[in-house]
Length: 599
Ligand code: NOJ
Image 1 (cartoon, rainbow, N blue to C red):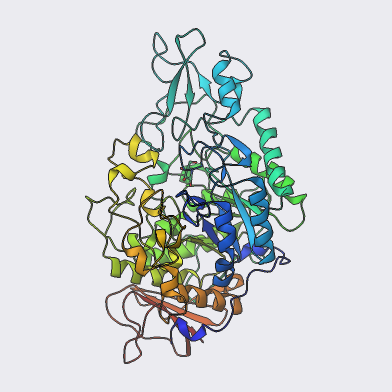
Image 2 (cartoon, protein in one colour):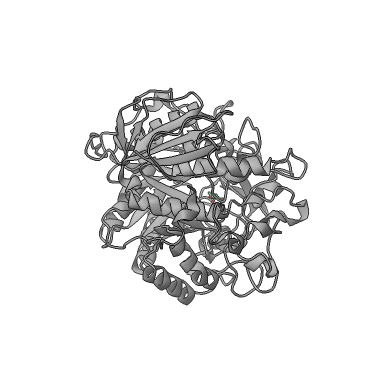
């Protein structure tokens, strides 16, 4: 049996009254530039999103998270905000936002928005004022301006590197026309870092939170949550330190360390089983185990900010939440962000970064559940987002370190294998207890555009690395709705800000809807079965029989086996609920396939 057997059953959207709804929520990430374009200018917008929200309710997700739509010069696709309280005209207006939020509410979908507090745009009025003001002024004190080193101050204040390549400092010209101070930007030159020791900055963001909470948002995805506080004095990085955090593969702790053994139960939240850590009693390892220490990242001071914000969120009804984008490792450091008085969730980038290898995945799953559980939080699961190669492409290449995009000159992914593995990985992920994040288009099995010509590239990573890193544009291409429509149904004019690859035509939503075995119907059926069986709120129990090349567990009466090997293996006894591909003629589970059975 495959997903199509369940087609006629409507998928239920999330109910807005669930307490702690986020513990088991499936959250769909919308990248507004590339979801749906109502005005036809080639860039997606809020009215486009509103028009397609029913498709997401129909898919069966509980919530949507929108990447930034705020006023922005778009130097980093909106992660460079010039006005935190308004919508950029390319995306619409505040009235369009309200209409979208109302539609989401009507459909029972929760709404999470992105918050970008580490840095603003250089076109933010505060930064413009800082440029006009003198060194030492209150205007400069909202950012990290410092004098340079060397006799004329013409060397940067320290050796930090931008995550996007090149130095993390840019020198300004003072009012008298002379070269002056330097300002810190952990990302692009056009993204100056705030000084989070500054009380004005803290108060501003409290007000920004309230602005969107008052408009009814259910939560925030907190960008660069591990970067906001820097070590006092801004000391140099150690020579051998890894600063390219977005390209850094997280470290999985030793297998078995605090993790479940076969036969042992591990729940999504471990709320009842695990000791609840209080803020001054961290249930995590100390600094000596922290292998990637850097004065720019993951400073203990960030946690004060989240405790402050949590108090604000808790004033509002409806269980508002925060999810941390924090590329920290090991997982024990990540647990600090989700202690009971901080954020509710953090993205699980260890899981996203795991290779196609059964032992690695078992270890990551174990460590994730144990670590989140140690602070009473649910684990999260994610395979794709707007910063990484989509998993349908990633699993189609053999790689050592996670590359920053795939370009036309790189070895190209095996599309069929990539999709097969992606479907198997997704079906395994959706059976895990906790909350899962999906990235727009993965329900269609979309790959990256891996053959994009350099002239189309817009990611600052491409420019700042001198083209040595192709960057993230490949995963940000407008998604496909209809095979025989302009821009594959993204809009009515055919314009797209990034080119869509040929493969997006046959993968368009209208080609998959209602078709047995399509990736779209597999997602729809899996989300329905996940909800019906309460898998998000369940508990994982490792199977007693654990072939080396399989990931086998049960959760809430559903047995799950993912076959990562290259030979068929047995399917557990019971009714087959869904599989990511057909079983063999003699009822075995083929390689690169996952099955759910009712045990
Ligand atoms: C993480 C975001 O996901 C990414 O797209 C962005 O470039 C950086 N943060 C900087 O805001």
